[in-house]
Length: 110
Image (tube, rainbow, N blue to C red; front, side):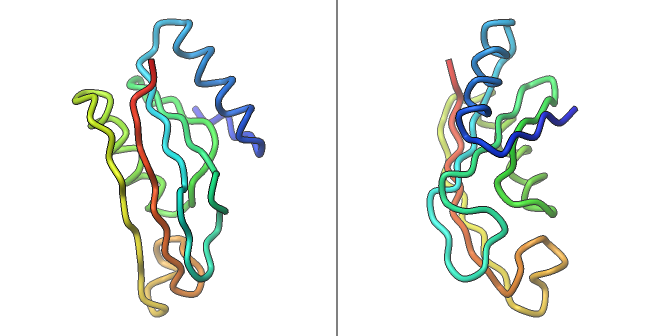
């Protein structure tokens, strides 16, 4: 159930509503990019323990990996900094154009 919104403030608003409704929520934020990256620094993805998503940090299988880590972060309460990088040859397979790299910070909200 994706509620993709282009504006980071909308993502925070959605996350706030989910928290108010009793959901457990994690927020993933792109904190650094190098080379070509589909989403700029500051892009956010909100994830609930029940599997709801809003926003985007990259696309491709990186988004799925971030959602999996978000669920771990909700369970443990421990924030995580994820580092993704890929060679030019595999870049399109995973959703990073031209060998881009990015760092994503994942934290539990509430």
